[in-house]
Length: 203
Image (tube, rainbow, N blue to C red):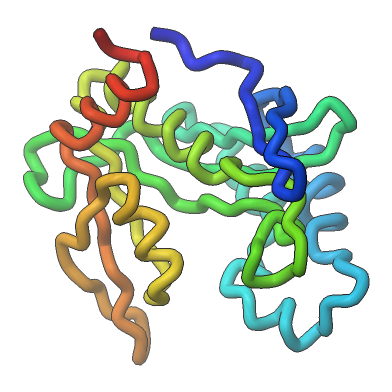
């Protein structure tokens, strides 16, 4: 029940599958491969880039602050050409938002590269990046004895919420951040085990 180091991504325009690598994301690679590259999108207006809610994230800074935190995982999907197509940051020592006596993985950040977003570019490069990273977090939850439970705070927009709901997550409450209500979603152990079984990780 080990997540493969090599994963499959679908090329958006041809629907062929290509091999990529699931790797630990270092501060250096985050700064060079995400912070300095992701938002260089020829033909996309600056105003449109700024509308993306993760545009201000600086992955390198986030990772360097966690150098001594043994409970976090920061992973990326990297192509054989060396481009980072998506990244995820999560913790392994948190509690369920539904039942606080049970453990869960908490996802702090999950993003696919802007050039993979159909809402931002006419032809995305790859599909399946975010789902693959999310599945890795679910498997880590299961392997750590949490039953696959995963919780997260989502942006409050329909497409982001739908991404998680389509994978079995449910909104369990809303937290207030300034004037914005942010949905808290959780994947139950039952939904997690169903997904892991469908993907061949459980018999």
